[in-house]
Image (tube, rainbow, N blue to C red; front, side, top):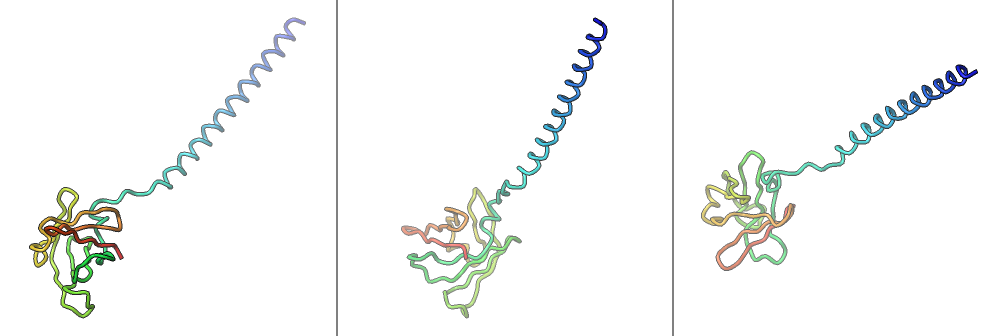
Length: 137
């Protein structure tokens, strides 16, 4: 009778361990699935060049007669000389140094201090005693 009781106890212990192992493997699978989903909601951080890329226009309240400036991903720009859509344009290349964008070519003398970003949709250009502000279209 003692051996029968020991067998029953051993069987219960074995079933209990199998049940726990099964639960642990299910929990592992669930946490692995959860981690896979977490990565999809993380936004990609833009590079400084990607943040500058696009068309910029004079911000409201900024006294500036020039037209829009477009910085392209290939390192070139195009800028209208006036706000008039039929005005001539200036083109050239640009470089980025220390988080500032520096146009080369026709705009080089006008932008010696470089454009800097205040946000992903607003940038500024110091010009002597005043600052010009631009917003992304």
